[in-house]
Length: 458
Image (cartoon, rainbow, N blue to C red; front, top):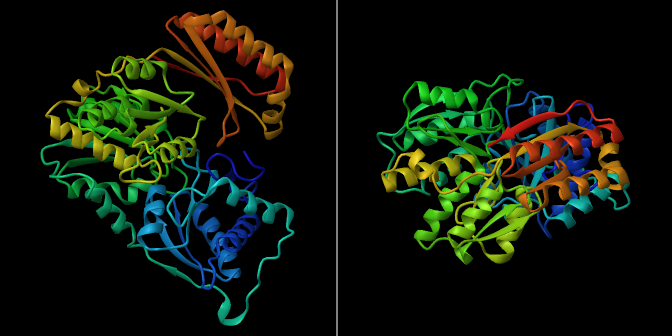
């Protein structure tokens, strides 16, 4: 993780940690680093629905144009729409202003290169150096050499058409609910799914600038589950603030997380000869139940660091077709170059339509292993201290010894939030809870974190 960029761009509280001045500097540096030889660069900028989105998008655009590149403002779009439109519109780079699943006060800047992939580490490091250290001189054009800002709010329709083309036939007769997290999917989901013939019930689709991810979306799917169950619908999908994640709910209201989605899709893709390398890519946080599923079904599981960018890097390196995370980032390399929540929901509904099966019936491939996840609030300094504290290391080792071969514990600082995550899983629920709480208590005592928030998953 760099000094400026985390695992998913630059993040911070808008207007204090992520200031307009910082956003201008990032825009100027990105334009300088990504400027092609012999012509003016062209950037696309999209936002989610946070009230600070216009402010930061304007600041980034000012920085880009001050360095002599042009900007096309896309308005509110999903993150994967920016990734797709960069290549579709032959732009040199794309910028998404979003903090994904985080609350409204946070915001972020993630940058895509001209090939639609998130910016590689080397280019992020060059931008970091320019912003934080200076050194390399950035051009300061005048007159007609200054960049222009235009707007194309209809470009999102190209993205919607692209997603529609990933399925055949239509979804007539399917009754679904879509929880848009009061975020980016609010601008696209109804048009997409209703155009395919589904009867769509929209939830959390009225953003007001501050209600994004607020007790809704993929991080709070309880409302969606209750709605699907009480209205007798066939399925539900919950997206996060920038719509690159998806959680599903079956007709009984049972949650289907990213690992379960992967098991359903992997089985189908293997059967159809679409699972290249007979491999699915996940992370070190992937539920052990998914790994058992892979072993039982003759599928290879490849684990990476946490973060969809690391999953994608492994998929590209080895030419794999499917990968993702428990959080709902699912990547289909045939159709996308980043996680895409709406694409995931489409493919799941398409599988339901092709198979004629209810979603509850499809969700029988994987037996999840019980997990306990404790999130500890921590400062940036606390994250650094975590890596060097011997007492924390000792507590982690003691927990591993206590669990033995019956479970495991993973402790890591988040790359996108001010958190340290303590995850334990195994067949003995009491043992994993004790292991997670013992490690969390030591971390809290050693680096002064606030009270732990615990999530049990079985």
